[in-house]
Structures are given as structure tokens and as C-alpha cells.
Length: 114
Image: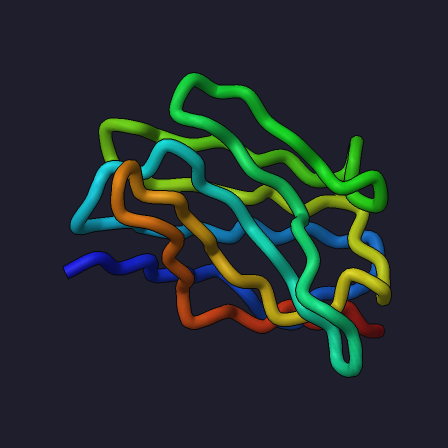
């Protein structure tokens, strides 16, 4: 069974930091990443990283968020820093499993508020 299980969301003040984790199992994922969806908005790509370590970021999070993965653990992380209120959203882990397709986690809420 293919699963992506997120953890690490929560409430943080503006300027604060969080780290999200996503444990993937049941397949080999050539690409892992994070999307987010704010209320009333479409789901958008935040960042992704290949098994070789090539990463891509949305312009809105460059220099503030960092994605990295531990291939041996099939886990991907998203370090969020300098958080802003506009980063408030449900963050979803996403993975592309070689030969099998795309999979999603259940989502974790990140709320940035004072």
C-alpha cells in the first residue's frame, strides 16, 4: 500500500519557523514535493525535489523555504522560515511513484498568526 504521511504543522507567529515531514512508503518515488491550498484558492506547488536532489521552488517561497529528502528513509522535509500570514494553508505532501503515478498525503494545517 502506497502512503504519504505528513507531520509537523501547527500555529506559528509571523517570522517564525516550522518543519514539515512526510514519510513515504510502498513505492519508490522519483519526485517528492509539497503543495499547499489556502481557503478559496487553488492548490499550488510549493517545492519539489528529485531523488537526485534537484529542487524547484515557487517564487513566493524562494530563500525562505528549503526542501530536502533522505532517500534511505523515503522521507521528504520542508523547512519553513520567515513565515508570513499568506503562508497559511493546508500543506500536502505529493509524490510521483515511478511507473505507478501520483500520490497525496492527507494534508497538514499551517497557520501563521499573532
